[in-house]
Length: 157
Image (cartoon, rainbow, N blue to C red; front, top):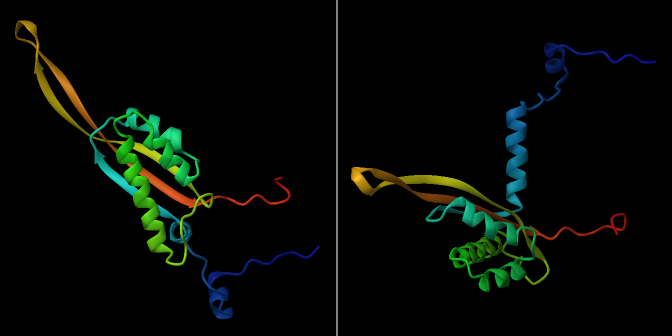
C-alpha cells in the first residue's frame, strides 16, 4: 500500500498548488452559482398574517407556473391576487434574466415559496371597566422562486 504524504503549507506553495477556498467562501460561491440560474422575487411587509399567506403558498408549491396562476385566480382568499401578482413578477424576472428563455406552459414550476413573519404593529383597543386589550396587526414576507421543471431520466421512470 502506498502511503499518501501530507505536504506542509510551505511545500504546497513551493509546488504552486492553489490554496483551497475557505468553507464560508466556498459556500458563498456555490450559492452565487445556484442563484445565477434561478429567478427569485420577494414581497416584503405584506399586510396579512404569515399563517394566512402560508395556506396559499402551500397550494401552489411545486405546481407548473401557469397552473399556479390559474389556481390563484379562482381562489377566494384575500391575498390570492397579490400572490398571483408576485408570481407574474417572477415570470417577468426570469425572462429578463435569461433573455433567450421564455416561460411557456409545462416548462417552469414554482420551485420554492416560503412565508416568513414580518413586523407586528401593536395597537390598543378599549375594553370594559377601564381596561385595554392589545391588538396585533401582523405583516409577512413572501419569497417565491421559479425554475425549470426537472427532467425525468430513464432511471427515474
